[in-house]
Image (cartoon, rainbow, N blue to C red):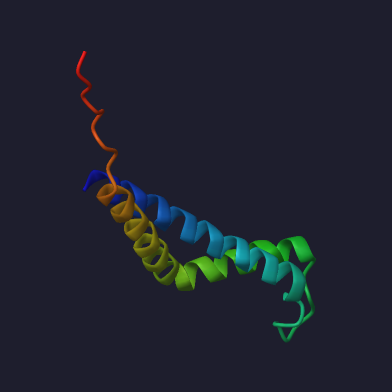
Length: 89
């Protein structure tokens, strides 16, 4: 059970970081197209959109990442190594 919880927590962290990375890339590449006013510099737009993506959709990324991580941890918890074979001496 501990293995599943650790994997789920890692999945949550990876999901939220991945979402922030996606927002930064989208802001850098398309930030000027998504606003009606004058476009900010690409670096500023990347930071802004990473924050916006994370602020609005952190719950979705955390749920998906946690579910995937939890399932991976559950799978690794079910497959345990065999005990060493006892040989006759």
